[in-house]
Amino acid sequence: MSELKPFYMDHSHKAQLRAWGLSEMMRGGFYALLFCLAIGVFFLVLWVIGLLLPEASKQAPGPMPYSQIEAPVSGTRLG
Image (cartoon, rainbow, N blue to C red; front, side, top):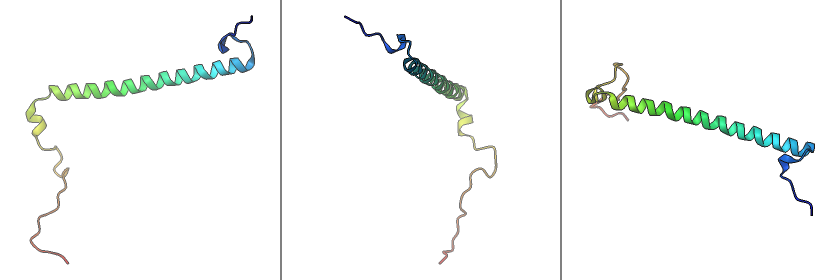
């Protein structure tokens, strides 16, 4: 009785190409995982820095005088 071998143990060109494609997809997934973890660590560090700031700095107005654009209050009605 012949026993079936996994495709990556076979020495045909088709099996080698399939194993190579699988390894490339796994490597790409690993790189994507590292990239997502790096973004997560970056935001985690920003969050921790935000926790260390005093509460008064979180309630202060922005440093730019025109960073908050608001419509002027007008007593007249157009139209």
